[in-house]
Image (cartoon, rainbow, N blue to C red; front, side):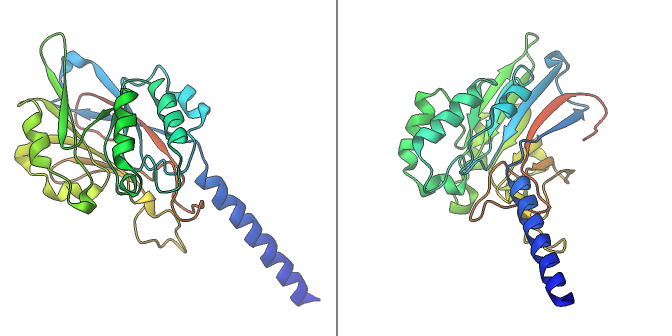
Length: 262
């Protein structure tokens, strides 16, 4: 009798854990960050970015869009917009939703190359999504200050050319770099003056067993030569489960002030 009671409790515990892991995988969470920089161009006031990475098989919730709509100046899609088995019609629907938030920019992830990436590139172009493949775009304030958004291609296939993106950026501009894989920071030098890097790829480890996973949880932290945001990501790969690394997106506000991340 006692043994059967233990078995029932274990089964109930397993079911509860499974349901919790499903819930963490399908959260619609927007994490808000405020980062201040002493050298942020004062004439911009503040700039707010909606960052989403690793969408994979998920359909973006309308709740997320309504939460950030009207709050972000632009959107950065940090790679792995799709993977093998995801329909292009679903991708178009996700892009249509993201465009409601603001002008959108995209960097390639490793899973984006599992599909017909030329077709994906054509869809991005047709929908007005700017692809940052080792390139940069520069914004200018009404006082002539400049902010550059750089993007590099997938590091895992050695498609990344940070040097090309830097050449494309305005000299002396405030620089933000988007790259799917966070190890791009190993190539950043002090003279590059890249103040912020946005990345994903690791899923924050996705599933932590007794606190352990091959990758640490997503974080925002100060490195030697830049500040790095690693997102847990919005979707999952292999199994639609998470534990200890809940699905997330980010609303990031940048402004002038004493250096502070939060």
